[in-house]
Amino acid sequence: MGAHEEITQAIAAHGMWKSRLNSAIQTGKSEYSPGTVQTDDHCDFGEWLKGAPGNLKNSPHYNKCCDLHKQFHKAAGNVLTLALAGKKAEASKAVDINSEFTKLSSSLVSELMAWDKEIS
Image (cartoon, rainbow, N blue to C red; front, side, top):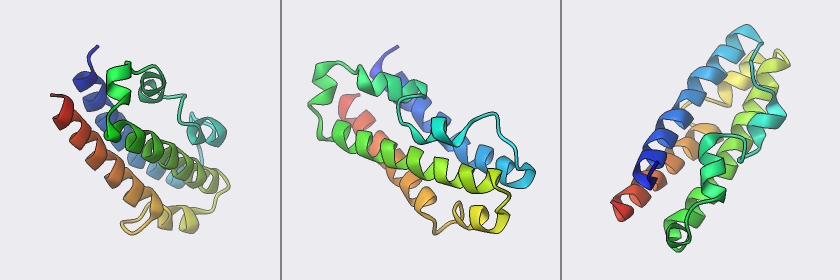
């Protein structure tokens, strides 16, 4: 799969996390563990990033995407920790419009789109 397809899939996959986290907040359950979610190399995109071709790693977007991706997963794992601990109010606040999670998610998507535009 090419870089464009990887980035497009990453945008969709990471967009699904808000739904997964909201479900965990409501039910107190998740098929994922916070420890796994907090790591940035357990998703398909994280694995691809680690092994991305050298020419893609030369882009300033690569380093920014790596950093934002890592922060995104840390924030998502923190939200999931709250959700699984039954702290619904705190977890809900941690995914609201002004939350770190939402800001990181938006920043990651914007950076991925900029990187995709550069390589396309």
